[in-house]
Length: 79
Image 1 (cartoon, rainbow, N blue to C red):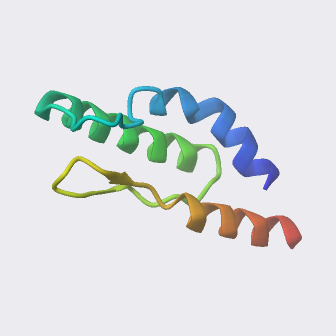
Image 2: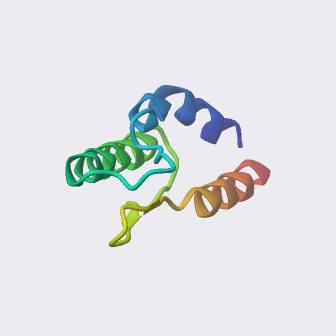
């Protein structure tokens, strides 16, 4: 869990613009969210967290395997 927190501290800046709003994003905003979400996942992996690339839905939603990464980090921390 400590590795997850450390990686998140170094990578969270990628997600500033990726958080969606209550209004549907424009195509340009969707593209920016995809780029930032991919950069975030790549950065987290670079800093030791096994995080998959995000999945994108047709309506602009982004799903990142944060729960998977948290679970793996917690298991790794117990070893």
